[in-house]
Image 1 (cartoon, helix red, strand yellow):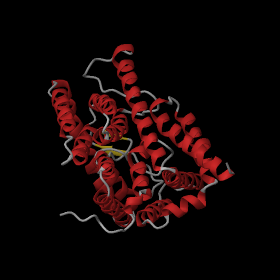
Image 2 (image 1 turned 180 degrees about the vertical axis):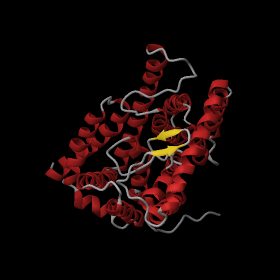
Image 3 (image 1 turned 30 degrees about the vertical axis):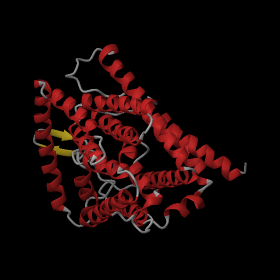
Length: 384
């Protein structure tokens, strides 16, 4: 075994530990260190190999353009500092390294990557069970009125719902693809556990995005029973008066936030305020820490120019995911991408940050699309 093989094997192991750690590691700083040591460091030894797997992807270069423009916007930020700029440079390197790491992990063996997905689903399903017991039984929060926050490094209810929702989609995919009955039961149970936790977070964005993503995944595939189960559980949950009140109050606060952010965008429409500007939003009902919409936040920071780059990146990602779906036997990557895009409509502020749940929600699907071999142009299968 040569040194490159050692680096690759260490990277695969570290990559898996990093993803699973999102659901178990209670310390954010420790989890950052896991990424630096277990993923970033091994990736440095396989850079040429990683670049060879992504450099032909237009989506990869649009991601680079978005990252570079966001970095450039630091210089017209009202709160510019060299420390902030260098910190954002470091975050940008981390995001690119994650794309490279995904490329190497997938290139090494698609079978190994399938195993990794299965481990992630099982680990997250077990974390869902532990989280539900910890939140409602051990800590004594009222069921089901209180909004569940998952164990590990989950920061809030919405990010918990998004992280578990994305893995739930992978679980649904494994269930649909599985031909062995006992294994199919395992993936079905895993999906139900993951989807149940998403419902208990009461995250409107995550629940709605998961329903639509599962519909895309199961369309014409005989798996609509999954959508039915999630829909039934969601309706039962939202019939609770307390949850309905939360739904209405949450929508009202979002409207105040979005109106304030739109006013900011109007003041600097072309290039925005820059990525280092304060993200706090002042509204008639109080101050909020961020824009609660990745799309409005992008326009606030980067203006029309940044928005064009960002939405072009998403458009190419959708087009590539549709092409992959047409050339393969599943719609997993399209479902994951749609889930991430929809779940961030009413939450999230910035994407180029240290390794967090947001990486799983946004950069993970993009990295999978960039590195999927089915995206390569070749004749489509003929039917009839």
